[in-house]
Length: 572
Image 1 (spheres, one colour):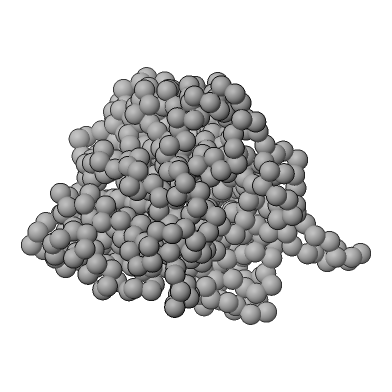
Image 2 (tube, rainbow, N blue to C red):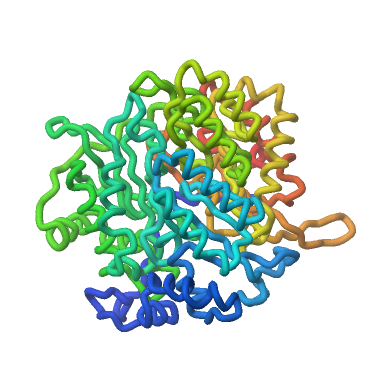
């Protein structure tokens, strides 16, 4: 059995010598069907048709180019039809897989959600989404079972509290990751809130930025925990202190995972708070104008950066898009503290913020509305979501801490989660996603419960988290390549003794991680060739490999460090 490294990864760019759909090089003639429908009508325009035609006339009135294309520009995908097993995902056409209901994605952009906003999210879940609501690892909220007839009223409610679905999906500037403790943390380097607010004010929904080559993801933080997974975003601004110029941002570009993972790179410049919105705008426009549009699987910004390199990218940014030189800047300091912010932490104003874990991101109407009530009951301020499917409540007064932490437990949240509940991510999976091959949310929830019971004797000895990512397909929405143990859903062939059968399972990725405590930079995990685990045996596998790690590790050695030196037998 062979161990296969998946990092570092060199991306193969598009073929030279022909048009690759770079607008500034090749012109704007569309080179594939997706580019054609985007050129015919900007996706942002579909909202008017939803409000005036489709919500009135129903699902059957929606043409294909809107239903399977432009609806994404407003955070809407058709969800998977119940009862279709994962083995048929690749065999059926989209219209055969899809239901007449939608997943709706609401962007939070790192904003502090007031009790009123939480109640609106809760009411949407209860009134229109059969009680569903998931916190994603992009700080979004996703609803399911949404009818097209209800979309205008959902938008009205969201916008009454400053929330949107605008460009939450599609080839656009999708929702931003922002530090969940922005503006309140005692150890914050710089507050990114003004940067995100200004970018949204100037460019959210701007038609000039709603026809990008592919999706474009943003992260901005000023906290030393590096809490926005900056290495897997198309653009990230990370708080640093320049020795002469003071607090500002370090610019990172070109990260993403999916089936061709690549970690972002430092451009090497220092960006001030005032410059940050224009620098962001410059990076987006480089992608728009120079991104490779011919082939969808080579259209992300990471392919352009791999082709150009950081020096050329910086030169084009400064000369063609900013019109001024950016000074060299320092890299971020090593991370201080976990970026999920779980637990009770002092704020700079004498109050506290409290990070709490739902179970694999699942909340729902009663939980969201109940959290709003609890926040008001103890006199706290607001809540933010995290890049780890968690929630952080801000401004809890000291005298209300005990009541608040106890109240979280009544809502199905906890500020003191076990190791695996805290460190497990799971994507939407087979229940609702048309790309999925296996179940994820229920599988992950069961695995967490079983592991925390089986490993109860061992968990107190482990002094570092072991991150588990459970993904229903190869696209890595649960960050499988940067988890300690990443599980990529697929149909696997198993020898049962009486014959070989196909069943849901996972390919295993091991030893990945992003910059954080104990790791100065990210690294993609590795696979062990042939190591695939049936979905019914995930708990057995994780228990086995964790016990081997605990038995063989050196003092304070992390799981990823152990994986890097372990022999193949120990990883089985």
